[in-house]
Amino acid sequence: MELGFRWYGTEDSITLNHIRQIPNLKQIVSAIYNVPVGEIWPLEEIQRLETAVKKKSLAFEVIESVPVHEEIKLGGQKKDYWISNFQETLKNLGKCGIKTVCYNFMPVFDWTRTNLSFQHQDGSNSLSFSWEQLPEVNSLDSLPSLPGWDLSYQQEELHELFRRYQEVDEEKLWENLSYFLKKIIPAAKEAGIKMAIHPDDPPFSIFGLPRIITDDKAYKRLFDIDSSVENGITFCTGSLAANSKNDIYKMLDSYLKLGKVHFMHARNIQLHENGDFEETAHASNYGSIDMVRVIELLKKHQFTGCIRPDHGRMIFGETGRPGYGLYDRALGASYIYGIWETLNK
Ligand code: CS2
Ligand code: MN
Figure 1: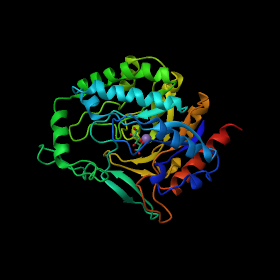
Figure 2: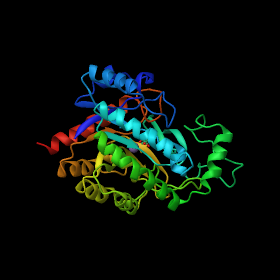
Figure 3: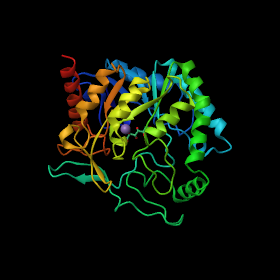
Figure 4: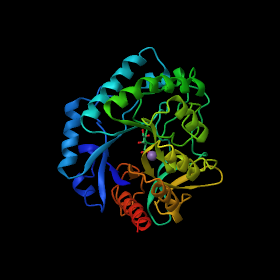
């Protein structure tokens, strides 16, 4: 297992100089952010990122994420064009020594929360989800304004997307994912890259939009599409645990055994009986996830991939990108490494 840290590039208020001071931190997880979704990531841009990271004696092996163009998820007419762009991006990433590419297949919105600064008793704050606060979408005329996504879409654009997704149910989305993977996995193989799909966050349908990477049954189906090692996953503890029916330890155990886990996200959440949850400190006693059990499984299967602290709280008065402050993620990283070291004594 190697500790990684997500970095949003030179636009990130957190610098590589700070990140490299986290004990035992070995890898930077990043992406090219200035290329529009679906366009090919130019080789020179990736090389520039690679150089910046390596100059700080950190490894650059995991990309999070290469976004999948909405036309691909919709199965639209131009999907082949966008898929071939994705293949080209993989080629360029392979040339820069990238081994793992995280992506997701969630329609319209990636992670969905109702509050970006839920107040904890100790004065820290974090992202949270509450059913009561989730806007209802009864018609296309009342589309949701969601924290974190308000500025991502123009109203008309959102409207058009929702309209088109009316034709895409879960079954259709599976078909579109399968179509995508059949073309992408061979390209990944050729580039020496393993694909790692991130689970839907949270793992259930929202606003009537289909979500499919949600539970054990879904993973079986995903692996059936292509059993090769390149068709793998990002195991995100906090995303999957937001459905109380998911036995994340059993799931992780079996996917590690299959060799399908290429990237780990360690995130803790406090899940409530009504399905609401808030993100917490990484330590097991702060949330619903037993982090020791998670790391024990990584040890059991001799996981050699990258693990990164996923969202952290905002602490010590820090402000900035919700979930992605420096301090709590650094604490999380150290906590995770502490468990690992103990297990390896
Ligand atoms: C991440 C996801 O910040 C987060 O919630 O875990 O955004 C993740 O990076 C993407 O869904 C992966 O494609
Ligand atoms: Mn995650």
